[in-house]
Image (cartoon, rainbow, N blue to C red):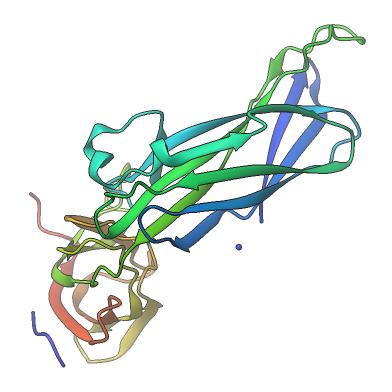
Length: 273
């Protein structure tokens, strides 16, 4: 390897024998908040929840930890001990924590976070999880059967001070897509974030065949790379690529104001492990 110098809609379905009978939905904005806040300060804000269904909707709010798993998928839980040095969960309060919304309506949920005076300079993360609740009233038209509850989340990133971004593209590997039998492959970029603030990559990934022809060009994934860890970032390879020799070339700025480059030669199908 060489180095050179936004509203998502969620739906819940109520099913009775015979198929889909009714559909309900809630919407939450914004889904991500990024805020700079000095130590010892307080910030207030508002989230908007919409109910687009013709009946009342109920929801409950939880204050959650968040992490990124090895598939680069956010995971939300009440407590993630591994994230304790970067969690802002204890700083948050929300009002209301539970509410009933009128049909086809919107409402505001207010949040406040208070940054401790002794909070070290870094980017902290936590989340507000909104879970839909079943109607507490008895069903009027017979049994409902199955009610699918929905969770919506807003992730908060709070940066205290001016932590310097520090990141390096450490390696590139190729592996089969999970759950498949030689029907697909993906690249894995291993990025080390040695600093105390989040990173997001911006760049390109180019795959060429052995004749030097470009067969796939893709943006580098913009997954958040959390501080003080090495994070896996997957990127699927075009399933239509025939067997043969290939090379991948990556050019990416991880937020450090420098372009890093990485190269890897590989052959499809992959050799048996």
